[in-house]
Length: 326
Image 1 (cartoon, rainbow, N blue to C red):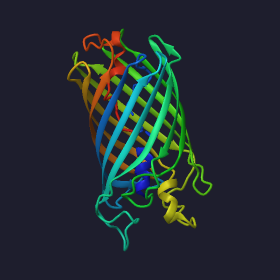
Image 2: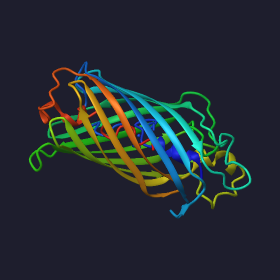
Image 3: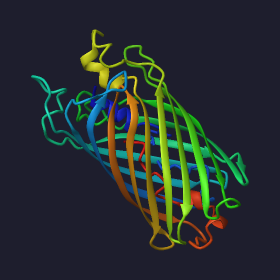
Image 4: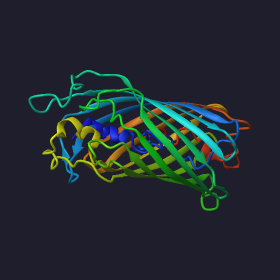
């Protein structure tokens, strides 16, 4: 299998990229919007490790380990009280740490890091319903920032243009468990074809969050992906251009689980930490890793003690931030 699988993952949900191309998975709780004139700037660092690949049956295979360092820069801004724009940019440095077979998997697999920018995403979210139940559809475009290498375990990504359409739903659980909420998202990505192959995919994400203290929030994360076409590994290895395109066009499916926490240092500054790992998958890498980040909010009237009064889920900058890019 290939590094592009990890990219398929990394770009996974992406209301974007997903994130771009979120796992996924940009922060999850995006049913809640910032108020007009409010926003957030976030920088997230991910350290990801792939020990095993998974074939078309979901069986683990050892094709050599991969280490990836990813930086995700994201921006969110409330255009009105019901409409928000967000964007992100990804920088990737991957290294293939093992060689299986007589030759490397691709030209980037030299045993060294090859840092480069990957993909960018721009999205619009519209809040259609904002009561105890919140409904926010969105549309996003994702695109490569330049013509980067797409072959090999340590390639930066898939370099494909994508259109994402989806919906975020959220609800506070104050009546059942004070200081808690649930959030979910479904998206459908229309992906640029590779040699006529249908690479469109569906993604779903879920999140449960809880305010442990006025400054500390905890969360549980889940992500799912199903690609509706593409090559299966290794049964489609007879494709005439398999070696050149399979990293871009793999039929990658997976399930990922994780958790994290956000700590509010000041009224406008948050720190977040997340961990996620692949628990099932087909035609994909099985990454696991951590993400740490910092977020600056330019938000009016923020008070950590007024959790739900200030629409907490929309203010937790670390909510799964960037984990869809695993």
